Amino acid sequence: GSTITYPLDRAIRMIVTVAIHRGVPAWGVRQLDSLRREAEQAAVPPLDRRDAVLAASYAQLGRPDLARRLLADYLQRLSAEERLVAWADWQAATGEIALVENRADDAIAAFRLAADADSGRLELARLGRTSARLARAFDRANRPDSAAVYYAQYADREMDTRVDASLMLPIALHRLGELAEARGDPSEAIRRYRAFARLWRDADPELQPQVADVRRRIAALEAREARLR
Image (cartoon, rainbow, N blue to C red; front, side, top):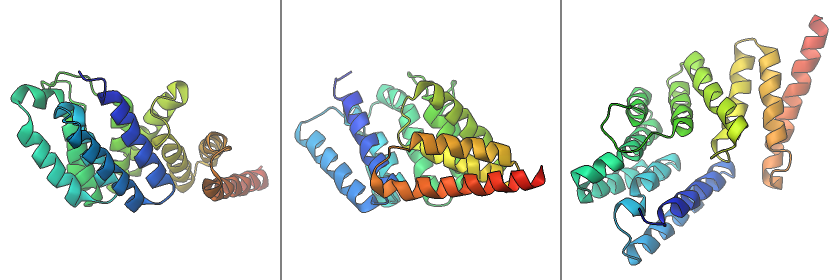
């Protein structure tokens, strides 16, 4: 494969991470547009342009219209063998489009296809990201127990490896704290919130209000626990 593939993936993830955490999706969309233009001008081969990854990213930034059009054009350009190579990214993009359109069950089905070892695709699924996607889909489907299982599966793995952690790990830890709090498990909520606060203790100033809010939640939970002892 081309050497552009993995650097381009990293650039896409960085853009989406900044756009989501800082709440600037329109900026993220403009940056993705710029990446696409650069790849087109450089005559990068279809697979290496990472259009399925870009489509998933557009959907995450709230533009399923752009995502659907890009994904359809991308698939038209691929041969049958290339579609197998692109299988996981293709299904992930399909799931992200469904998720932003509030079709949670369709998203779950697509994300499961992305991880399906019997799909015939030629590359292993990235299990960490698949767990995170399924967690978000189950969360959207109002299935908190399943969401917690997948968030925990993802977060526990990422806390060990810190691979691809910048976008989803803080989201997963924060949501695990909320889910534990909602089901009446303050000890688990405190554990997850503390992990979030540690992860983002040196985050950029505009993200620090989220850290301060989590620390207030920890203090309130600890005070409540102390009263019950």
